[in-house]
Length: 251
View 1 (cartoon, rainbow, N blue to C red):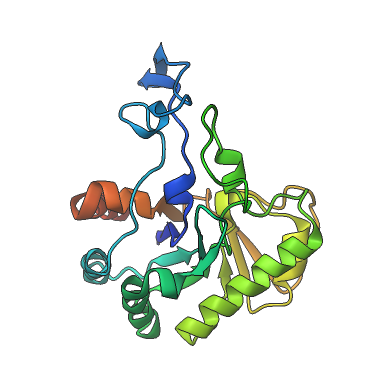
View 2 (view 1 turned 135 degrees about the vertical axis):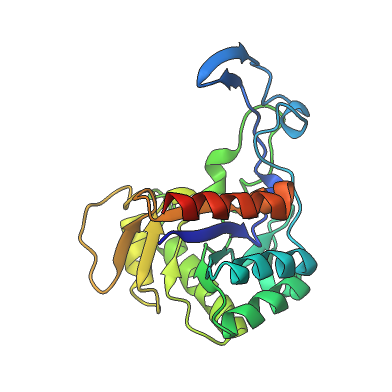
């Protein structure tokens, strides 16, 4: 059984994480190198744009995607970043920034049509999240680097849990670390919450300590189809139906 997971919902990473595509490949063989991909405006235009900018999914779009999931009897994990970080480093809670979208997801969560996961408070290192004139800012769109102090890890975990659980009126028990980056400091903070499961492509970057009361699932084990709201925004319902059909045939 394949579990579908959608990341980056509510995250300003979709807007400020701007980096370009330097290497172009055909059948995994490089055929063109563009060294200016991360210079100025190139990182925001096709065909050099690797990631941002793209818009948040609307409530109407979500209703269409949720209908497709329901038709196929799929309960997706929706990994939500609790706050949008604006250009002035102000944090705006997801239910306030995207109220219509949040209402649709709340209704689906209450009806057990989706599972809501914690995808961090900010998804980024606040204050370093804005795009640069030259170079990629991708590194700073990972929230839980080991070098950040313990207080930051704890504050971000506890605040994100409070925002999500207060709005959805249900326990949030899954944590999906942004960019698969997390630390033993993150784990110690998770112990103070309702989180029971961490899903990531990587274990803690700075420790192999065995977790107590929290399980770990590697999403590269073949049981997950993990993607981003970016894919839904750019490719739409036809793309989703195709991926569901591929997953179900392969299963």
